[in-house]
Each structure stands twice: as structure tokens, then as C-alpha cells.
Length: 100
Image (tube, rainbow, N blue to C red; front, side, top):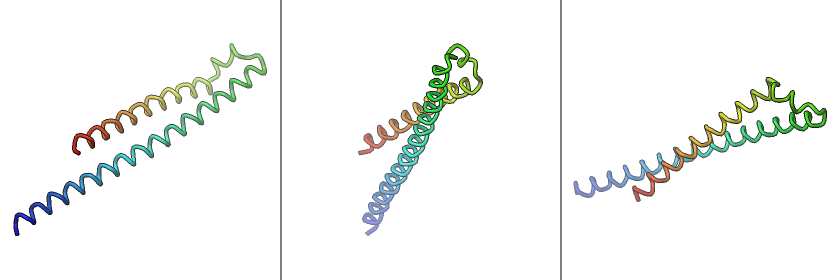
């Protein structure tokens, strides 16, 4: 009877670890989708500013516009964060496949 109890605990621990891993991966996916959405918004804002600059023949001046500099910095930060999240998600998927 003790052997069955030990085996039941092992199975339960595996199930618990698998559920925790799935929840962690789901949270990373949500964070990734959120960051991708932020990046899209930043690109749209930058595109609007560039369009306005093209219309007004101000392309040379736009590179010094503080709001454009801020947008470009934000885009670069978002791209780095997305790469980190994708790497984290990839590592979690590798870990799951090794457990199986």
C-alpha cells in the first residue's frame, strides 16, 4: 500500500509541475502579445509623424524631433524585450520537451 501512495505522490507532483510550467508559459505568451501590441502602436505613431514630415517636406528636421527620438528608443526597447520573451518561451518549450 505504501508503494502505491508513493507512486501517487510522484504522479501528482509531475502533474503539478506540468501545470505550473503551462501557467508560466501562458503568462509569458500574454506578456509577449502585450509587448508586440505596444511595438505596433509605436510604429504607427512613428509612421504618422513621418507621413506628416513628408507632407510638409521636413524629413531632415524630423530626426531631431524629441518625440521621434523617444519613439525610436521605445521601439528598440520593445524589440529587445520581445526577443528576451521569445527566448524565455523557447527555453520553457525546450524544458517541457526534455521532461516528456
